[in-house]
Image (cartoon, rainbow over all chains, first blue to last red; front, side, top):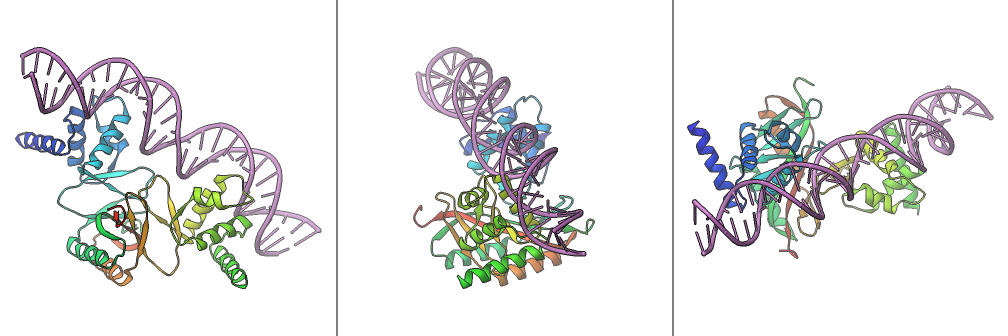
Amino acid sequence: MVKKEIEKNDFKNLLKKGGLKSTPIRLNILEIFSKNNKPINADFIFSKLKGITDEATVYRSLSSFEKCGILKRIDLRMSSIYFELSDINHHHHIVCTKCGEIEDFKESEIIERFLLKIVKDSRNFKNITEHSLELFGTCRVCN
Amino acid sequence: MVKKEIEKNDFKNLLKKGGLKSTPIRLNILEIFSKNNKPINADFIFSKLKGITDEATVYRSLSSFEKCGILKRIDLRMSSIYFELSDINHHHHIVCTKCGEIEDFKESEIIERFLLKIVKDSRNFKNITEHSLELFGTCRVCN
DNA sequence: ATCTACTTGCAAACCATTTGCATTTATGAT
DNA sequence: ATCATAAATGCAAATGGTTTGCAAGTAGAT
């Protein structure tokens, strides 16, 4: 629980840095992200939250969090939008198109070099701030 | 117009290969894709189509086309889904988050090698069939 | 030419997400 | 600590892209 307190303070700082007020709901949402090391959506969060009656609040939080950089959006080709904490531990995903299983992978150096090359070669873009990179296939079990 | 006839036959073959019937609307849709070398959505297609009264038909076509591999989905983080012809000329996009301008880039060899490495390193995935890779930033004009 | 399965039109439903407005709450200044 | 103010929440309704059920039309195989 000492750890939990530290975490809570981290989240408070995160919110403050983002210019957002620190509310119980928001701290809970961040805790849910921190507990579940995978992309999650508004529904999932709403189902885990206690003391909240309106899913719109979740949507508003997610939107604010993305805007100020706390979260990053993950395009999984599902019907709803998924997010993850945009931590330092930058990674991407392989998604099983049959069962939805997700595996992470991490190729920071390659991707970093790749982005530099793209920017160097581009006419109109010298400023790339985000990227999506997700792989889709069938996992060992489904194959 | 000779060229156009050739193209139409290409499309007919494409549909046949996909197990889909060749209808005027479908040929028109494919022609629209062929004329517009950029990711487009259902609305755009519907607005260009003549002799059609129901957007649901467009959605159904897009869905069939994607399923049989004629189209590929492009995740542009817009509110609607975009598609492109999945031609041999495999490429990706840089999207301006301010004005929506799109630039293509093509790094087949790097990406090919990259995917091989990922598959080699992965525990659960030996079969990657698709991938999304889009970059987001601000273009020279908006910057 | 006919038969059958696939396609389309029409209308309605669906579902994730957004929005307006009144109320409550967090935070910085007093 | 209290207060004032801007921001966050709850509630309800709207939005908008996409999907679906059903009846009628049409392409393609025989």
